[in-house]
Structures are given as C-alpha cells and as structure tokens.
Image (tube, rainbow, N blue to C red; front, top):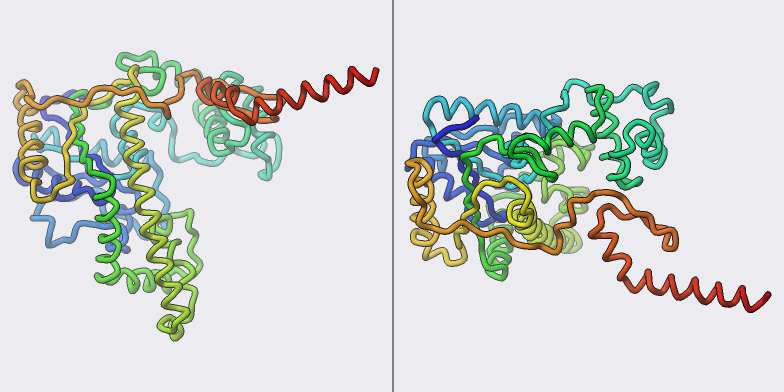
Length: 413
C-alpha cells in the first residue's frame, strides 16, 4: 500500500529509549503505536518484557501488546497479518502508524513482501506419507528428500539445518510449487532483490537509536537492577507457580530472563533466602545482565547487516539518533525525529542526512549455494564462508597433512 502518510519504524538496542520516543511522536502527530516484540504480545511478565505501563501510555492506543495467554503459540505470519491490517486501517484514518520493537523477524515481515506471506498458516504439519518416512527423520534424510523435490533450494541449505529444510518442504507441500521458484518470483518482482522482496510500504522511515557501547552496557546493568527492585523475582516466581512445567522454547517462556532464573526458581521457597539461595539469585541476576547486553549487541548487528549492509536490497531511509547523553535527548533525539517525520508527512526535503550503505564483513555474498570440503568433512553455505574456510589455518594444515600422507605412501612403493 502506498500512502503519503509514512510508516515510522523505531529501532534500537534494548534500553535505548524506543518507547519514550514512540510516545513523543505519537502524541505530537496523533499517531498510534504498534508493538513488534514477540514477548510483549503475551499477558504477564510485564517487568521482564519491559512493557510500557498503562499510566505511562498517555492515552495513546497501543496495538499487539497483551493479546495472548502465556502458553499460546503465535507465528510470525499471524503477527504480520494482524499488524498489516492495523497499519492499513490507521493510514485510511489518516493516523500515523508507529512500529516499535525489538523482534527482528516481526519487523522484517511488515517491511518486505517476503515468503512468510506466501504460506498458509492453517497447515503447519507435513503428512508423514508425503515424506515417505516416519517423524524421526534426520535432517540429512530430509535434505536428501528436498534434493529430489527442489534441488536448487537444497543447494542453498546446510544438511543440518532441519528447520529450514522442513520449511522448504512445507512450502512445496502447501503451495504445490518449489520454494526456490517462489523466491525467484519474489526477488524478480518490482523493487525486489536477491535478498528480499519489495517494500510493502514504500513511504517508510527508520529512526535508529544508537548509543555508545560502554554507556549502553552500564544502562542495561542498571535497568536489570531496577527490574529486581520493581518486583522481577516475584513476577517470575508467580508465573513459575502457575506453569510449573514450562517449555522455554514456547510462548512467553522464551523471554530473556525466565530461563536465566530457572535454577533459583527450582529452589524451595523456604530456602531461597538462605545463603546458598541468595548466591544462586545473584548469579542469575548477573547472567541476565550478560544475556541482555549480548542481545543488545545482536540488535545493533542486525540493523547494520539488514538495512545498511546490502546494497542490492530495497530498504527504507535510516536516520541515526544519538541517545548516549540523556541530557541532550531533546536536541539529539526528540527534535530531530520530529523534523524528520514532518518532512516525510509534508513531502519536503529532510535536512538531516540518512545513513549511507556500508560494506559489512558479516554480510555474505548473495550466492547461497552450499560448498563441501571433502578434506575437512565440512559443509559451508555461501561463497563468503567458503572462501574464509579455504584461507583458514585448519584447512591449510589439512592440506599439509594430506601431502605428508601422500608423500609417505609414495615412499613405501
């Protein structure tokens, strides 16, 4: 859908101030906020998932937050369908849609017309007779099956990547069309590229909140301490009582923080305040800080790779907002963001420069074909990883070893 009214996407590491900026912009431009956090869609764990408090929402409508029970599953396709429906309605009502989030694949599902919208969510299981085997199939056997049905796709997937292999088989089963063919059509469509389809909303703008790494790490550590003071332990303990046999791969239990406190939650309540219990609690808190910092770094890398590091991909303009110094928030963040949004609403030239594309070493070549090193008995996806391996010390040593063995064999003759 094309609209003069832009779609605003606020990105940034956890703890960078995305919620604060979204509220400021929504209030100023009469917009509404759409969450893009895979854990905030669940009811409960408000502290650990850092949900904006009701009293802090300023009466601004928030969508796709607190819509599911903790044990429910919610696919990216289901999220995409609901989010796009909300965005389209807001645009028709001339209300500014503001996406705020930290779940990468949620945001990508909205921005690009990618394969996720080609697959019907009602049929997630492939019949066993379609695979011709039982459900204990190894990823290698599934890869062989894919190789016979969609050889081009099989070339792009590592034989150990069972999830992606099953995904390709699922696409073929549901659509009656090879996954590789659908991707080819998607990429060749107007605005598409080899790494994605065209932008769903061409008039989109990304506001990227960036912070000095040392400062951000200090903030994240402080944030965890604040969560503990606000009642994090009681929150986790209560939901643990409610769902004692929780699966950390499903629903809200995937949230950062829950599994980090598992060892503490398994202690009898009467013993948690004892010396050993308090030591375990402190270890859990430190673990949560470490995982949170690691996740923040991952979010930064994602923005660089997905939005700035792929020159052939259609991406919205990305504007950097420096949130390092909170005392300069108004000048560096609030006022700048306001001017950027105003320029896109009015269709005038934005006086702030968008970020340029960058070359990133973590961005592999678009060629996703797999390469097999018989010598090292390893498989690599893409020429980028393949070339790195060929230059590695391990591969060179393997070559030297083979030469020694060959020389020794010839000497015995």
